[in-house]
Image 1 (cartoon, rainbow, N blue to C red):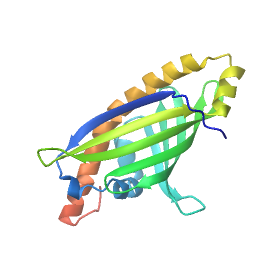
Image 2: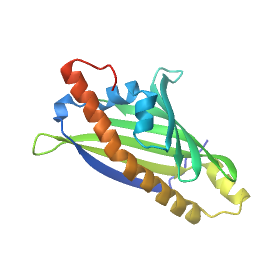
Image 3: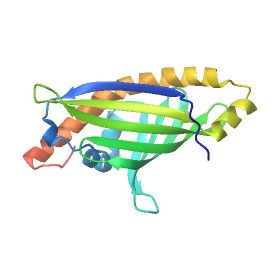
Length: 185
């Protein structure tokens, strides 16, 4: 599977978390996120989530969600995962009215300190076409420009809605960890 340099869509949204950066652990949150909490972070788009590892032991997050009118199954592998930054990379299966194809999605979860002792969370999502996606477009008489425009609109809308909910969830997880209770977060 060849990933192409073109960008299908790119968006970044931010939300503040009322917790100091020292208490934030994005990687821990991401790889212990319950399916129910994932679903709450973008109702009704988020359908299911789980974690596993690749054959070579890298952390992986599996997410199933609706992006616009497409059902997307993401197989995010951690390129980098630490307390303040995760870079997840997925060859994602996309199911549309025209059938199934694949795109490359890079998901970056970023935490930065603010001047008032809080944390700014940024959720950045960039998608690239694959050679399979280009073949899919040709097969169905679709253009890359049209597909990119539709993907940009749908992905940006989804990211705008999920970012503040992810930030709130990360904040609840940090507060629960500070209290010593991680039961239902």
